[in-house]
Image 1 (cartoon, one colour):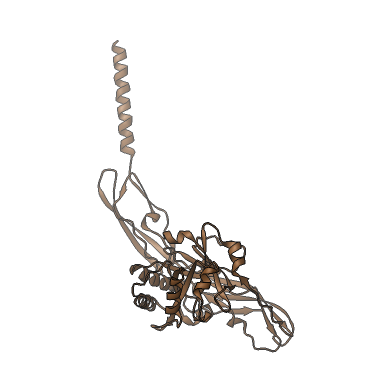
Image 2: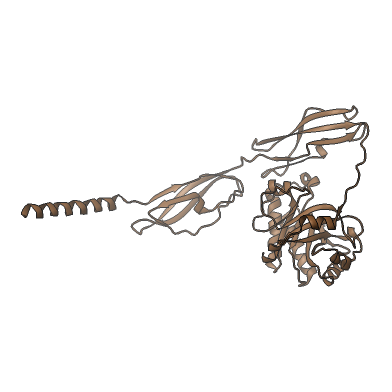
Amino acid sequence: MKKLILFLSLLTLFGCNKVKEQEVNLTTNVDINKTKLEYYENINLYDLIKIENGTILTENYQIDTKSLGEKQISFKYKDIDSQEKEYNFTINIDDTTPPLIFASKKYTTEKGKEFNLLDKVVCGDNYDREMKCTIEGTYDINKVGEYPVKIVTTDSHNNTFSKDTTVIVKDKIKNSNPTYYYLKDFIEKYKTDYTIVGIDVSSWQGNINWKKVKESGVDAAMIRIGYGSKNKSTIDKKFKQNLKNAKEAGIKVGIYYYSYAKDTSEAINQAKWIINELNNEKLDLPIAFDWEDWSDFMSYKINFNDLNDIANAFMEEIEKNGYKAINYGSATYHEKVWDTQNYPTWLAYYTDNNDFEEDYIMWQVASDGIVPGIEGYVDLDIIKNTIFNQ
């Protein structure tokens, strides 16, 4: 019996010591997941750190990555013994993103006519505000033929990008036949229980018979309110007429502004101008930021991040004043340039097979629409019903 009691006592003592030993071995470990960040990378403090057996006390915040070089990061945490401590580490922000070239796969010109390939392409970067393109290879506009060439651009951090294209020189270029997209065919092809049919218009469409437009099957319209640059906005000559008559015809309305803004202050002023012009006018659809002056982008001397700051500043100001905002752009620029994740997308993509992978709530399908009540062409849009829940 005494031996049994002794054995149980030793077992209990051994077990207690083992528990105490395990407790003693528990420590608070801080690991840094990432110390190398990309310029303008969207990342938060909690994405960088991992802590075991402890609690982070510092609130999560977005890391400022808008300047290159080393940056000191510190945060407070509580360890396993409930002691408050501070941890410091260094991150390095670098630009390793290559620039971009926007160019077609081929360019066709007539023999002897003035043609400069570099005038047709856009080169831009996430960091550099002035980019130059060069051509590897040659073409002769005075000799019929096909000339494969390479367009190359390199940023100040030696990130390089190139794109192949072909210059085709012909004796004469035949005029292509005009195309049409009749509204009734468009409705039959694209309208579903989850979408409505829309158009977008400006003074270019002249005087519109909105009653006839509505009767033809159009549910909504994005109407240009104006355009502007250098802190001067000009109202579209048909805006007030279009807004009034479209509403009276029972069409849901939104508006768009064609911007040439070169900085955020200019974009904010444009948004304020819109708010003033609307004077509390009710809209069914968002107010769209429409910046598409890509042919002159290189003369703006801004980078892609600057442009996104401009768009976001415009839309933030719009939403501060009680309206919804949306960013307009083509599929290519939405995929490669635009980073406006806080706002929905109005996609311009002229294709029957929409393979755009990101989310969008409006899709501009065609620019050659024929709609009763409108003379000439008009843009045709498909709008998801979810837009009314945004």
